Amino acid sequence: MQERNIIAGFTASVLSPFIEGWQQMLWFLILAIILILGDLRFGIAAAKKRGERIRPSRAVRRSINKLVDYICWLSIAAVVGINFGTVFNVPLLSVIIMAIVCIIELSSIIDNYLEYKGIKQKVNLIKLIAHIFRRPEIEDVLESTEKTEQNQEDNEQDCE
Image (tube, rainbow, N blue to C red; front, side, top):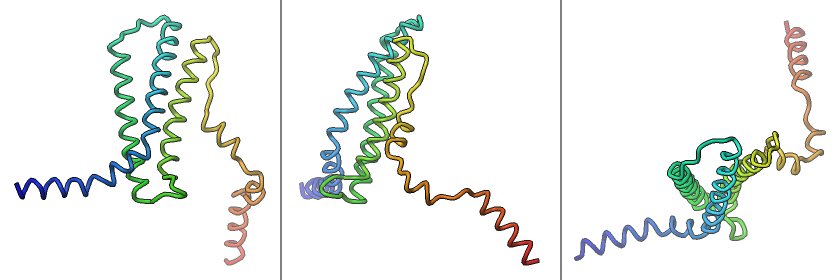
């Protein structure tokens, strides 16, 4: 009896931070399920448009694999959130990790939707977001590396 209490207490104390991290990230799991269902729906529609045979067992297996992948990513994000803390009660790094994963899945949904509608183009959401958040002031600070390399070669020749 004593041994069981020690094991239970040790397990609870070790797992409680992990469970707390998971509780903060639970809404990402709900979002992941919604994204997986959307990808399933438009993936099937795009496959029908291509004339492929739809096998329900494969579709369900791939959806479950995606859910397991999301659970793994959520676990990694929760551990990162535990280790690096939170800002204003928001696990910032965890949110960034899961936002990137969700953007990738959303990109897949949009690509399947465009294929279903017969549009022969792809959307790169990561480039779109990078373009939105691009800061022109930063570009003014950056210089070409060609000038720097040329200056270094000139300086090396002067030293000889």
